[in-house]
Length: 218
Length: 219
Image 1 (cartoon, each protein chain N blue to C red):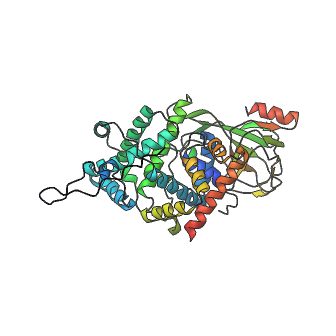
Image 2: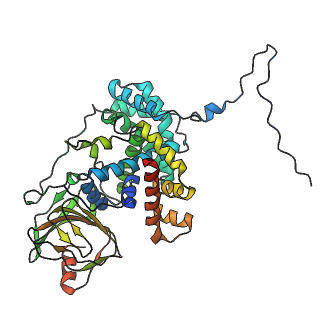
Image 3: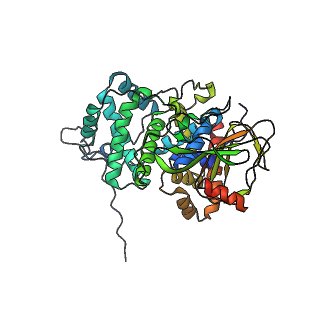
């Protein structure tokens, strides 16, 4: 897979430090599972976290702490790592893969939102209010022009779009925040499916687009 | 007015009548057992002993070293002490439970334990937000068929020590940016305050610090 767009270091570092919202983390994770380059970047940052942990000034624990930990260990059942369950995704075109980062999530069937446009709401069991969704847009169509109040992450699962700045294809990642005003256009030849998360509301420019926004609850 | 001079420390170990040196009354070593840190590969070996034969003395050594550090880390990230203590214990229980998944060819012990503590903290934040109790965050190591390229196998114990060396070479401000990123409840706000810069420029400072760190590592 020819991946050309990757998350910036500040996002990867926030992932490593554990300070991202659930939805944001899931979309970023779905990029990482396809991208060995970014996994390697993340490993360096995790190692940085490890080094900083190693340097931390020890904070003494209660005298009984080790005994209590052994007691809890004794109470553990035989430890077997759970296999990852794969949820039933809405039908995806051949070649598009449901990210394994979403293994425990569920998604609604495709819902029509306009000509050549449908979406599916992804529910994250651990975070019911996470705004994560799939967008499916036919070849040649474009998304309503919008800006962001928060951070919008997009991971391309299938097809290609151009947002006026660059071309994005399968495996590519994009982060857009308040500074970016864009109108993604899907390339001819194939429809485009993206996984996206929002940690703020989208701001659409036209009334029809605003209707779309209220439909998807963004 | 004359300022009293600080008392000079007592001379070295005094001799007893029998000529043998007297043991110091309070050894510094017992207060700070890690004055000369053990190399990371020692911790890796102990983790493997836990994985292979449920070695309790090995686990106790890991506990003595890492549990207080995990606790400090959690306190710095905003957990009250009682909760940090509880979570640090939980983290070490998880270390025991998952030790079979630890691969010394892939990660340093400190890195692996850091990610366990990090994931527990993420779970806790979710619970605090009233979201239902959680599955663990996605673990890339559980991906089947996720074959590692040779150049991904870098973060062994030795590499972890190189990383600490590189970190020490960074300018103070960049070290501070990285430290605050990992050990703060709201890292960006804190970085902006500590450095006296607008919140909007924190991201670029963070990126710069990471770029510099990678540069030093590539040398």
